[in-house]
Length: 244
Image 1 (tube, one colour):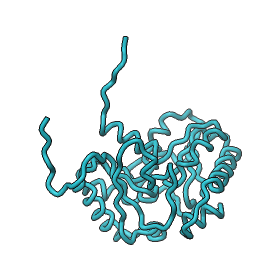
Image 2 (image 1 turned 30 degrees about the horizontal axis):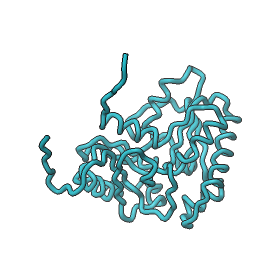
Image 3 (image 1 turned 90 degrees about the horizontal axis):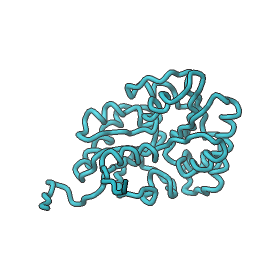
């Protein structure tokens, strides 16, 4: 087989490109920003100067640095691009329109798929990083329709260790403590709203605790990693071997 080089590309074999905010937070295994989370190679690209606080301002000027980083990933050969914060949803349309590969910036893109699996009186519980800044515009702005009555949102901003690590960015994170905080939030959610039959973890730092949340609630748990693995499986199909 003869392989041909792509102009400007100096490495190969990375299917998923991941746009990273400019943060000072440890990314533990299971986090979107930790390469050992994946069973396949990914490529990271920092969006220089893009902080969580800046993202929450919803400033349209942030589109330019996101596009610049996205173009760099495309040049290096990735086949699709995601991000490391669900609030990047507000720029999904602009980035997808410009880049020449599939773009899926927010874990919230899974909501219509999840909603279609629900019964008429059932809900999706969303655990997000900061519920104060979560509104339905994040969902509708991506061109999606999800009945607001079918979702219930709760945030991690009241959990002190998570807040210091993810929002204040003190550079420290104890995953055992954050797991207990995430469990507390999840249990509170399903106790208050027994109609919740699926959980979506909006924040890219929460997938490490998805297993514990699933065990505690008995519910399906979707997150950034379920989405990334799903897209990868569509980009890099495998051949099947077996017997009849």
